Amino acid sequence: MESYRNPVLAASLLAPPAVCALLTPFRDSFDNANAALLLAVVIVAVAAFGIRLAGVLAAVSSAVWFDFFLTVPYNTFTIDSRDDIETTILLVLIGIVVSEIAIWGRRQQARASRHRGYLDGVITTSQAVASGGSADDLIDHVRAELTAVLGIDGAKFVAGDKQTSAPQLNADGTVTRGGHVLKVERDGLPTNSEIELSVHHAGATRGRFLLTAAARIARPDLEQRLVAVALAEQVGAALSTQEPLHPHL
Image (cartoon, rainbow, N blue to C red; front, side):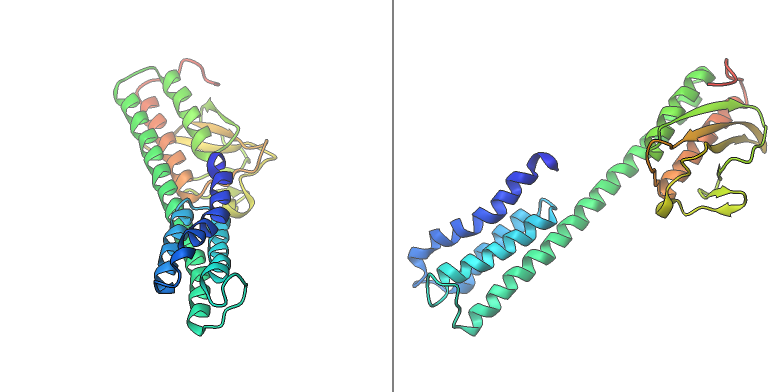
């Protein structure tokens, strides 16, 4: 977004007066409602980029220059007609509403893209398990997936069934410390200790991933945490038939 943010902001300010100036020679021969429709198209085009500020600026700029160029008295920021006042207000409202819709749409698109990425990661891991590759390679792959999915600094695998008092990422996606559920979406993952993600299969603990989120606050949502659990389960399935070459990675 940063690559085109400034050009879009510039267009949001400059496009409306350019359109109004082009319509000025014809302002006595067509209804102002038609001009407002053209400006609405400009607002929608700018707002479609999903930058809230650009949509608002385009709306305000359209309203201001519609008033200046196309409403009586011309070339002043005064409006005598009630219809023109209503049209000006509508232009601003259109910009705000369309901007919010565009932002919502882009968020949904980004979320869908993330979902596809999570699914691809789980499928790739399943394929690695099915192919019967080495456990160490699989663990390395899952460590990288966990780091990306959770947005953390890193992860390491420790074999064995030893239990500790560290915070736990549980099978239901909750994160607990000392039996208390942490509000990850609000406060983020613990930064002062590693988080354990146990690796189970057929009721037996095969090891655990130690997740580190110390450098920055990571706030993975429930879906991301459940994907992490699913990835760990794939490792558990693989370790049910073979042991990793190294107990501590």
